[in-house]
Structure formats: structure tokens, C-alpha cells
Image (cartoon, rainbow, N blue to C red):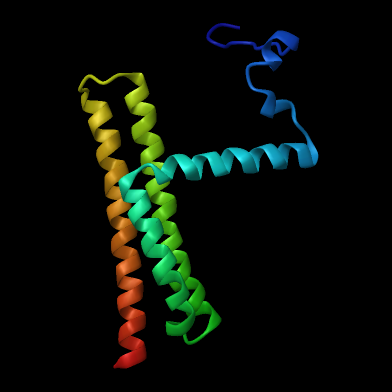
Length: 138
């Protein structure tokens, strides 16, 4: 088979990533631990920390501002989405930085697109909140 790679899994490759071989609740338990580690790592990023602090303030206000469960969910979800996109942007930047610190056009493009995704999520969140505020008070 030209151009393809066949991978044989055996006991020597199992130690590389034990999560691939976990099953059931054991897998869920370890995955939750990895997710918490990711949140802790994100907390060390200034932008994520600022957005998380803002979320702790703003998400409870969604329950006051939203006039239905749909509005409340949309308001809260838009804030959480900003945090999700920020984590993904940080993951892209971290992976690129691991490859090397030198400047490369493709690295810059990937980082710029991640930043643009954060900007779009912020604009979407702000417009949803502005529309809800307008609807509530005007």
C-alpha cells in the first residue's frame, strides 16, 4: 500500500496515551480531569481570565434580563461561547508556539484567524446582549 501507514497497537504503544484504552466511567473520570487541567491552564491566560471574571458577573444577570427561558439561555450561552472560542484560540496559539518561535506566514495566519474568531464571538455576544437590553427597556 503506497502512501499509507499501518499502525499496530501493542503493549509498547499503549503507554503513549493510556486514555485511548480506558473504558466506561474510568474514561469519563480521567477526561474530566483533563478538562479541569485545561481550564486551569486557560486561567493563566489574561484574556480568558478577564472573560471568565466577566462571565461570573454577567451570566447571573441573564436570569434577570431574559424574559423567557430561551432569552436567558441565549444570553448565558453567548457569554460561555466567548470563553470556549478563547480557549480554542489559546490552544491554536500554544500548538503553533510549540512548533517553533520563528516567524512564519502560516503561523501568523492561523493565529490571526483564531483572534478573528474571538472577535466575532465577542461581537455576537455584545449584539445579543444589546438586543436584549433594548427589548427589555425600550
